[in-house]
Amino acid sequence: MMKFATWNVNSIRQRQDHVLDYLAREQPDVLALQEIKCQTEVFPVDVFRAAGYDSIVVGQKSYNGVAILTRHPHEVTHTALPGWETDPAQARYVEIRCRGLVFGNLYLPNGNSGGSAGYDSKLAFMEALALHARGMLLAGQDFVLLGDYNVCPTDEDYAPGALSPDDALVRPQSRAAFRRLLWLGLTDALRALHPVGRFYTFWDYQAAAWQRDSGLRIDHALLSPRVAERLLTALPARDERGKPQPSDHVPLAVTLADAPG
DNA sequence: ATGCCTTGTTTGACAAGA
Image 1 (cartoon, rainbow, N blue to C red):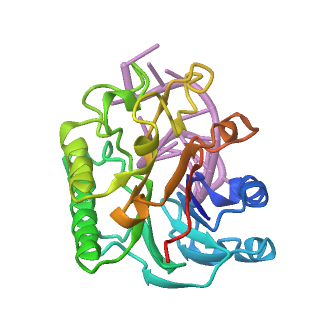
Image 2: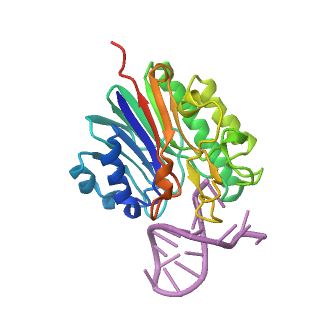
Image 3: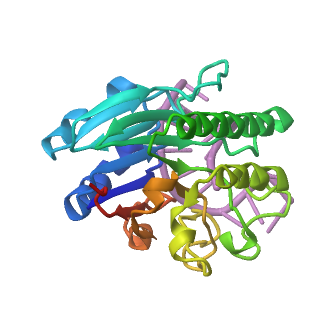
C-alpha cells in the first residue's frame, strides 16, 4: 500500500510540531507541503530527517514556498512548473519521482490579489499545469498532481455564503481550467470515492468559520489513469483544524493499492 | 463591510491569504 497527503501548513516554522505529529501518526510515504513561508536554507531539514523523512524544498522569503517530505529513495524532476515564470520568481511547484510515481506538488495562485494581472497569472499557471500533465500522459508516466489548487470545483465545494460569486476560487474560468485537467483523463481522488457531500479542506481563521463549518474544498489530489485504478481511500484530516494553533488548511490523505505486477 | 484572524517583515503597521 502507498499513502500520500497534501497539506498547506501556513508557515512550516509555526507548524513544525503539527507536521511531526502527523508523520508519526500517519506515516505517509510522501507528504506535500505548501506555504512553508521560509527560504530554503531555513527549512527544518534536520528535524524531519530525525523523524525518518528527507526534505525536498523550494522556498522563498515571506510567502509561498513548497516542500515534499518522503521516507523513500527519490529523484527531483522539477523545482518549478515548466512554462510558468514570474518576475520575481514565486516558489509554487516542486516535483519528484518516487516508488514508480511522479508527485507534482503545487501551490496555485489565489487570484484575488493583484487585479486582473493576478488573476491572469492564476489562469496561466493552470494552463501550464494542463500542458505539463498532457506531456506526462503522452510519455506514459504514472503521476499525482496534488496541492492547494485554490479552486472550488463545484458549488458543493464551499459552504453557502463562504465566498462571493465572483471570487477567483469559484469564477467560471477557474472551474473550466480545473475541468480541463479532468478532461485530460485525471481523476479527482476525493470525488471519485465521495461523489456527493461536503468535504472541506480549509476554514478561514476569521468569523468563526471553523465553528460554523463554513469551509472550502480547495486542496486536491488528481491521479493519472493507472494510478486512479489503485485508489483505495481519500479524506481530509478534519481533526487537525480543531487543534491549538492550527493551519487554516487540513491534510488531504490518499491511499493506493500496490501497483499490479 | 475587503472587515472579522494569522503570518512574515519593514518591529509597528502593512500586505497577503481565500
